[in-house]
Image 1 (cartoon, rainbow, N blue to C red):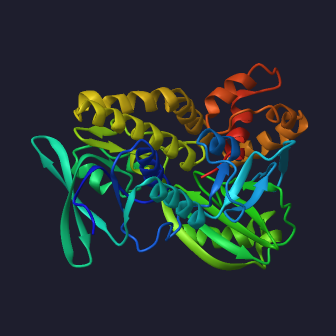
Image 2 (image 1 turned 45 degrees about the horizontal axis):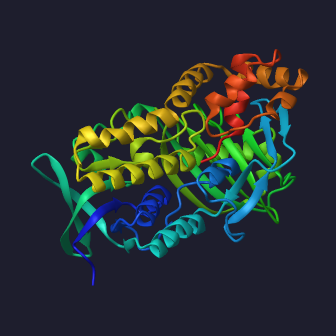
Amino acid sequence: MHKFFSDAIVVGGGPCGSFTALNLAKLGVDVNVFEEHAEIGVPCHCAGHLSIKGLKLLGLHPLPSEIVENVFYGAIFHSPKGRSFHVRFSSPVTCAVNRVLFDKYIAKMAERAGAHYFLNSMVESVIIENGFVKAVIVRRGKVEERFSAKVVVDAEGISSRILRQAGLVAFNRHMLVKAVEAEVENVQGLETGMVEVFLGRDYAPGFYAWLMPKGDGKAKVGLAAKTGNPRELLQRFMLRHPTASKKLRGAKILQASFHSIPLGGPIPKAFSNGFLVVGDAASHVKPTTGGGVIFGMTCAKIAAEVAYEALRNNDFSSDFLYKYQSRCNKTLGSDVKFMLRIKKMLDALPDDKIDDAINFCAKIGLDKTLQNVEDIDFQGRSFLRMLRNPRMPIALSYFLLSCLFANR
C-alpha cells in the first residue's frame, strides 16, 4: 500500500533523481520517487564515461566491478585530417560504466535507505496552491492519483515539462546538441586503456565524436552535433573518417540510442516555492563536454541538503530555497562561466586550425603538462593551475583539455 503524502517527492529515477532520494532518505526524510518507465536505467541515453575523482567526491568509488566496463589512463585526440595527440596518465582517471546497472545501483541504495519507488508512474502535472507547489498528479496506467509533499524535486531530464509548469524558464534550446550513442562489436586496433576523441565539422559539426573500448573487440562509439542527422553522421564517421574508419568500417552496431544535450550552462533559476530542479532539467551539464552525471549528482546532493533544512525549518518559500541556487552557483558557477567562454572560442575554430592545434601540441610536448591535471570535472580550476606552465597556450591547450575530459 503506497502513501499519498510524504515529506518530499522526486520526479525521475535517473542518477540525479535517485541520488537526491538517497541523500534525503539518509537524512531521515520520507521520500517518494516517480519514474515513468517500467525499469530504472532503461532506456539508456548516455555513454557512461565518468571521472574517478568525481565519483570519489560523491562517495561512490569504488563501484561494484560488474558496473565498471573499463578504466582509462588517458585519451587520443584525432584531428579532422587524421593527425593525433596522446595524453596518458600514470593511473586511471576515468571509467566507462554500464549506465543501466549504474542507475539501478544508485536507486537500490536509495531504496535501502528508505526511499519509495513507483515505476510506470508518469508525473503529469504539479499542483500549485497559494503560489506553492504542493502535489503532483501521477498517471499509472489509466488511473490518475494525487500525491502530496512539502517539497518537490524535479529530476525529469531534458524534457523540462514539469519545470515549465512550475513557472520556471527552461534552458536555451538553441544551445542543444543532438547525440547518438552506439554499442558496437568487431572493432579493430583498439588501445583498450585510452579513450579516443575525433574532431571535425564534417563528422560532428559543433561538437565531437568518441570511441570508448570495452574489451573483446567491443566499444561504445558516438557523437553529438549542432546540425545534421546524428544517425547519418555516425554512419559517415564510421565509414569515412581517415582514422576512425580503419577501426570501425567492419564494426556491427548492436544497439543505438539518441538524445539531446543542453550546453548553455545551468538555468538562471532552479527553484521556486516548494520546488527544486536538478540534473539535465536544470542544465547541470559541462558546456565544453556535455558531461552531466557528476555535475548533476553534485547538485542533487545539495538539493537534498537544502530540502532537509527546509523541512526542519518548515519553510519552503523561494526566499529559503534560494540557498540551493546559491550553493550550486558557488560550487559550479566560476567553472561553468569559464567553460562557456572557452566553448564559444572553440566553436569558432575551423578544421584547419584544429589540425594545426593538435600538431602544435604534439610538437611542444603538451602531454607532459596535461599529465598534471588534478580535477577533470571542475575544469576552470584545473586550467588556472596549468596556466603557470609557460608552454600552455590558452586556446590550444584548453581545446585539448575539454575534449580529453568528455565524460557524460
